[in-house]
Length: 315
Image 1 (cartoon, rainbow, N blue to C red):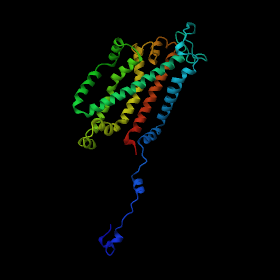
Image 2 (cartoon, rainbow, N blue to C red):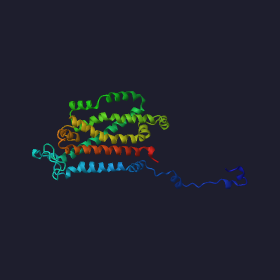
Image 3 (cartoon, rainbow, N blue to C red):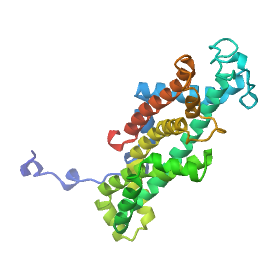
Image 4 (cartoon, helix red, strand yellow):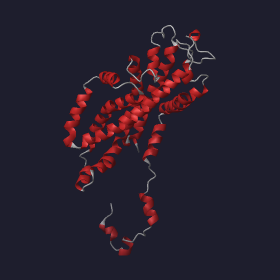
């Protein structure tokens, strides 16, 4: 440690001097190459299983098979011909997935139904996420509305989901649009509840209190101060919502209250073959395998991407 005697006898010019100011050097010191989304991508790529699932789903199932499989197939779903003499043909070079009980090509039926189910799942996931995030932010931040949204949540959540969908199917009807709207109208509950709980953690922090004291508008506080901390939660819920929607649609269609007989889906196919798959297991294996692969892929991708988007995992 320096002593006072060390500085005795030295001139003032030797002890103190002016540092030259350089704007370039000053900017370089305050500059950082850090990018949030770039860091998210780097962290995500470290999860090898998630990357494999991403490739498996996006490029194989969503792009190639769901949309190209119908083009490379030998038969068109819209012009399927019923021929009882061709019923229950096992997979072969002519019928790649075999034929059903009416002698129709099973390949085009399965992939057309997969395309419908995936499209429904994506619409529902995005719709319920947007609605759930908006309601969750308001629910968690505006104290006066907490009681109202809590009672609304309890009122809707305490009634079994199957009752809602049964009443809608019987009263309103069965179609792609009706099911999508119905699932969004009920599915926002989970997202809103999680967002609300997260908002409670950040609502009264110092920077939010300062923003309120400065008169910052509510929408700006929610979108700029709080929403960025919820990205990982939102991504995880969206990723898990897609397989959940496909599984739910399959269950509802299996029970006869799904999309309707004029709109093919994986659940409708499974419901049609439930009386035959014990003798002809290929009728169950193909659609069930697709549902399983989609569910597992999105579960792994959702968890990996959620961890990668968490700011606490960034260096």
